[in-house]
Length: 185
Image (tube, rainbow, N blue to C red; front, side):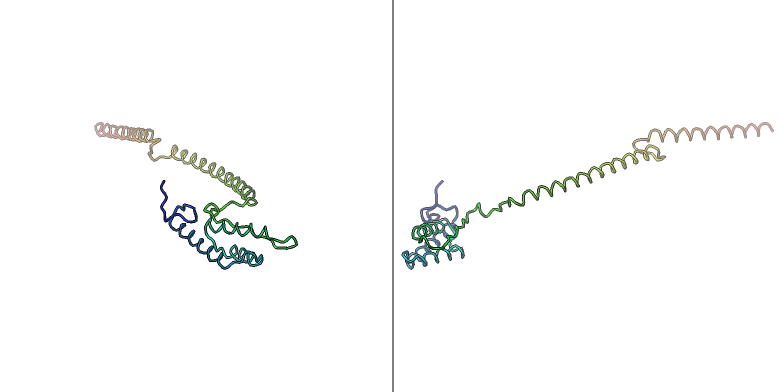
């Protein structure tokens, strides 16, 4: 893959133009600091190093390398009886911007989620039994009901026709009886 020339700064090939501009900006800051900084003065170098870290002056690897150079110089020139402590250099890479899980919070979250899962499981089981019971009751109502439905339509229709046939036979018998009475007179 070819790297664009305007994406190169300080010997590094950056992925975007924005990163390359930030790196060139860091180079300019370093040049400005180097012109004014007296490396023989330990306190001045320590002050520049600490202020650069506290104020997040540098944004790219070029600035981080410069801070490492200052850190090395401070370690070499540090006096044995000095109580000066070096701050670590914060790395601002893309990977450090992703949220890292807190190792101490991890077990607490797992314990809490296990308790919640148990409660949810209990609720789910109770709800399933209730719904199953409700379905059984609905089937019983459907089977014993008088209205025709998909389960008992044949039986209901057959019973209605049988009832109509019986009523019709009773009426015919009653009509024949009346006819006999009328003709017998």
